[in-house]
Amino acid sequence: MNDYLQHILNFQTQFDRNAVKIENGEKLTGKEKPDGIIICGMGASGNAGKIIHDLHRELNLPQVIPWNDYGLPENNFKNPFYIFASFSGNTEEEYLSIEEYLKGKMENKGLCAVVSSGGKLKEFAEKNKLPLASFEGNGLMPRESLGVLYTAILKILSMFFELPKQFIPSPVSENFKKTADNLATSLQGKIPLIYTDRKNVALGHIWKTNLNETAKMLALTNILPEIFHNEVQVFEKSADKYAVIWIYDEETARRNQKKLSEIHKIFDEKRIVTFALPVTASNREEQIWHSVVLANLVSYNLATLQGLDPTEISVIDMLKGVHRN
Image 1 (tube, rainbow, N blue to C red):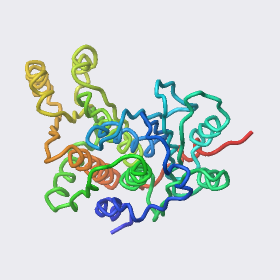
Image 2 (cartoon, rainbow, N blue to C red; image 1 turned 180 degrees about the vertical axis):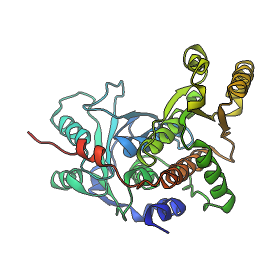
Image 3 (tube, rainbow, N blue to C red; image 1 turned 90 degrees about the horizontal axis):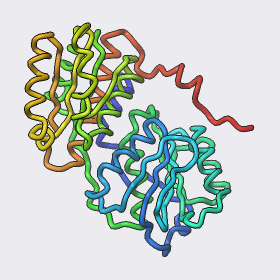
């Protein structure tokens, strides 16, 4: 079994807060509790921020703004807490953003921390004695490391907030592997369209980006009920190109019941492959991580079916990195 697959199957091992080292934490001790959190990150690091945004109520956190761009977002927080997250530590956008933060003279500057496994961002944090949550990369690709990033961000947040007991996903079962195998086989040669409700937008994005990076497939995502006002028109022709993945909860299904019923009739008529991945679990965290692991495993299986290397990201590497003037 190769390392990439082993990392997916051992995903639950990433949720160990003891594996996260905190440096310069005394700079946060005794400080006023933030009234808002801004998590700056690109790619997988940004996805960790999106998940924490979606779970902020369950985690007893104030408003969370995930930010995946250069610079810093506008906000109305009186005492914000900025987290600059990069798995590799060599992401240009985060390096430039933290430089902007340190040079800035905002009245509501608040506090900041860095989350990284190494690279220039970690070196920068250590040099400037910034609060830092660091961890070992252990050979993970960034998109495999969502659990580690999530855990590291929560550990730094635990210095301010009383978080619920750490959630650990269940190990991958044989039935789960079969589901991923069947889904990958049916998606082969198609353009996946991932449709979610607003509550699960982050999951749609994670599915899309995993299929892009790991399986080297074009995949698109959109939300309910917006798709009924534009995107459904594409099914009038060339429908055999697509496969539809639905990710939504029961409340969304009830609200969109009539339109969903009609669109499924069209899908049946056009013979469009469709998959419903209902968001059902004992709690919201379990729902999210179940879907994340499935996205990873399906994307890996699709890469294997196509004879592709799931770790190959040469185009991304060409465009990525810290560039200093």
